[in-house]
Image 1 (cartoon, one colour):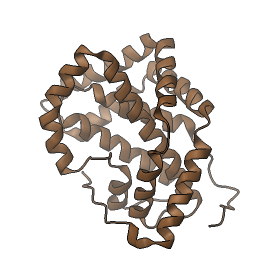
Image 2: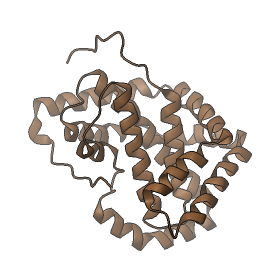
Image 3: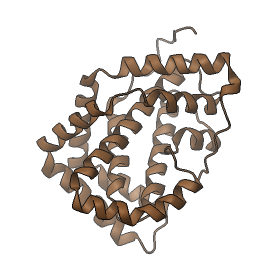
Image 4: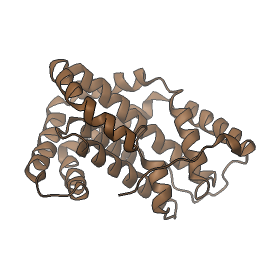
Length: 246
C-alpha cells in the first residue's frame, strides 16, 4: 500500500485524543449501570466524527457506530454489564486501584484507536470498508503494552490528583442531578462540558504530553498497516460488525 502524499493532511491532534480518552475513561466512575456505557460510547463516536471532519469527511451513522462502539459494547454486552455492574462497583470501592487500572486500559484503548483512525483517513481506507478498519483496529490494539500507558496515567494522576478529583467531582455531580429527567445524550453533552473545565483541560494536556512521549504510536501504526493489508488481500477475514447508533 502506498504512503499518503497529501501535504495538506492534518497532523495528529494529540490534545483532542487525550481529551476524549480522558472523558471516556472517567465514565467508569459514573454510578449508573448501562448509562455509564451509553455515555462512553457516545463520546467515542463523537471522537470518530471529530477525526473524520478534521480530514474533510462526514461518515454515515452506521460507519460511526462500527468504528466508535467500545469492544463488547453491543446488546449482549449491556446484559452482562447489568449483571456484573454491582459486583464491579463494590470491588472498585474496596480496591480503588482497580479503578485506575480499568481507566488506564480504557484511556489506552480510546487513545490508540484515535491514532489508527487518523491513519486510516491518511491512507484513504476511510471512507470505505469501516468493518475492515474496525477489525484491524481490534487486532492491533491488543499488541500494545498497556502497562506503559498505566504508568504514564498513574504518574500524571499523582502529579495532578487534585485536578483529576475536581474533574470527577464536577462531572459526576452534574450527572447525578440530571439522572432522572435527562436522556443519555443530554447527559453526554453535560459530561463533555463539565468534564473539560479548566482542571480537565490541564489534565488532558499533561496526558497528551505523557502519551506522546511513550513512543508507542509507530509500533501501533505498523501493526495497523499490516492488519489492513491482510484484510485488503483477504476480505473474507472481515466479518460483519454491528453497532447500534443512538
